[in-house]
Image 1 (spheres, rainbow, N blue to C red):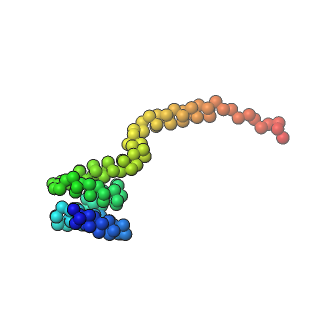
Image 2: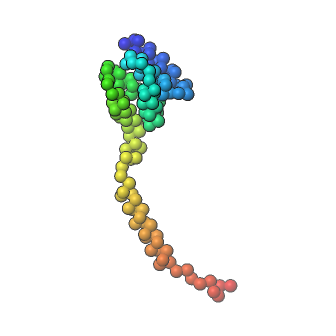
Image 3: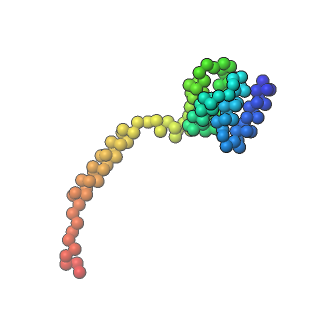
Length: 131
């Protein structure tokens, strides 16, 4: 277990200042699961990074490695753990972004129709005789 912790600390320090976090996370994945580095793994890491950010992906990988010592197809599991971590941290904002906008759009349409009706009903008085 101390080797896992040292490994985690090493890659965390590298990740903080890295210009290419996908490569660092892919290397960390390779060290945890004893698999060779590949472009596909770096691509998978970058895809998760673009959605969740470097530290959410990093800590999700730690959780995944702690719970699942071997994984055949890691992406779906890793994505699910990242999503849960992200929702736990940003739940109120994240959940609203997945709600249907149909009700909101229909209320905007009604409001727009009311504004158009008021505009038609509005008569501007003549300015004759004011000068």
